[in-house]
Amino acid sequence: MADPKGFITTPRQDWPRRPVEERVRDWDEVYVPGALLPLISKQADRCMDCGVPFCHEACPLGNLIPEWNDLVSRDDWRAASDRLHATNNFPEFTGRLCPAPCEAGCVLAINQPAVTIKNVEVAIADRAWADGLTPPRPPDRLSGKTVAVIGSGPTGLAAAQQLTRAGHTVAVYEKDDRIGGLMRYGIPEFKMEKRHLDRRIEQMRAEGTKFRTSTTVGRDVMAGDLRTRYDAVVVATGATEWRELHVPGRELTGIQQAMEYLPLANRVCEGDLVASPMSAAGKHVVIVGGGDTGADCLGTAVRDGAASVTQLDIYAQPATERDEDTDPWPTYPKIYRLSAAHEEARELESAPAADADARLFAASTLRFTGDATGHVRSLHLVEVDARRRPVEGTARALPADLVLLALGFSGPDREDGLVEQLGLALESRGTIARGGGFETNVPGVFAAGDAARGQSLIVWAIAEGRAVAAAVDRHLTGSSRLPTPIGPYDRPMSV
Ligand SMILES: Cc1cc2nc3c(=O)[nH]c(=O)nc-3n(C[C@H](O)[C@H](O)[C@H](O)COP(=O)(O)OP(=O)(O)OC[C@H]3O[C@@H](n4cnc5c(N)ncnc54)[C@H](O)[C@@H]3O)c2cc1C
Ligand code: SF4
Figure 1: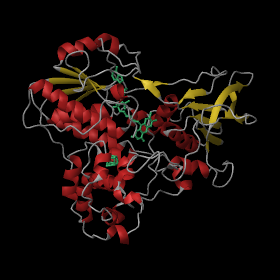
Figure 2: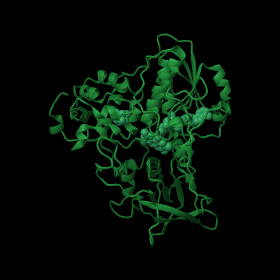
Figure 3: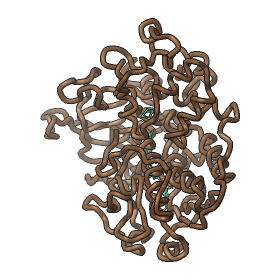
Figure 4: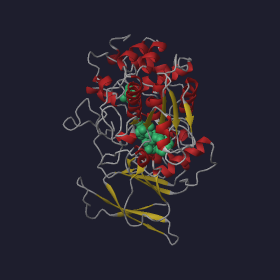
């Protein structure tokens, strides 16, 4: 660290967001362009270079955080980029999208604001691209072995890049028309502009990875054929089987799944559509589900020009401070957080009151009612206690012309027949079963990411992609120099 007293003399400062009234009129990222670099070296200097860096332990990728904080504080961007890319293929994705369990584990966070680790990460990544420090790294020689990766989300991309760089010939099969998985058509542009994704894909193409888009394995290509044609197969198909809400009135029109709504908005940003056929413009929108997918619907509906937006969360409103008994440092605490989208909804003209939250906590949906055409017009709810029992006298109705269900995902989508064609065993919760070495019950077929772990995070997807690549490399060559992030990989985990 350039200044050993940085954590005392420099207060935490985050990458500033653009004013709400400006950013809700476009789809660009919410941050002020160019405002991060001038402040980041001082911020990195707040790192205490702890003897036991809990942040490093808390990052699923084992990112070498104190090392690159030190390098950034000394303005050595080339070395910082090398150390960052040593553990993370796509730091510009995690630097924008990760919930940053590292910051919850930062030693400084015990009694003051954590180091802005995620901001430092994205600053290094963006600077590396701007300075030409991320050229393609094709392998020196080819192994003669071939690998098919099914699915092009962060898991498939990380696995493919690691295996290509190790010298194997890798083809990525993707059923969508574009590469990227949920980062392409789930996560909105205002959280991560897709140009970051496109730039990495170009880098991967230049390294030799082949991409086959609009190809559903199980339908357009038989899964068994891939097994015969390739020396190994990696299944990284995600967990996109959405959960349903079984209440009266669910059959009304205007009640959509979040992942029916969000991809259309993303297609508008890609230039495929002039306007979304499911646009929230002028509508009273209710989002059922208090998680990040719901927040993405909220930000999208606000940009669509919704008349009002309410997000329902079945859980009680969390406390603003960490509860040391249930969520002790350095774990990731369940606390009240205000995302960029929540900030925007609060400032909508139709917001219930200045500073009011668009979220209703401890709210359970009872039923929907509609008009004579069969279109939803109201959502009826009731407040619930901690055991989800209705609280008497709290039932009421909200106006609802568009209802978005964001209730999470149960496991891999089974419609394409891939699981059956390969004869893959499943866990009881519907995810693909695998052993400690990432191999499924079918020899030579490996599973990673949300498909095997269950609904999770980008950082875990990249960690899984890197780990499965090392396992496949070992399977193909008998040993591997590819690193395996620390895990654990044997249980579902969000953060
Ligand atoms: C709306 C939304 C917002 C999110 N926001 C965040 C966030 O801000 N931060 C964060 O960390 N995480 C976020 N997540 C979670 C994160 O996106 C996922 O955990 C991550 O993308 C999982 O990566 P994956 O590669 O395993 O699967 P996916 O990203 O789901 O990719 C799987 C790919 O496989 C393809 N595929 C499936 N079946 C086949 C087949 N038979 N043939 C060919 N291709 C196939 C799919 O089309 C898809 O492209 C969000 C999730 C959603 C839904
Ligand atoms: S990937 Fe996530 S946990 Fe790891 S350093 Fe970046 S923000 Fe922190």
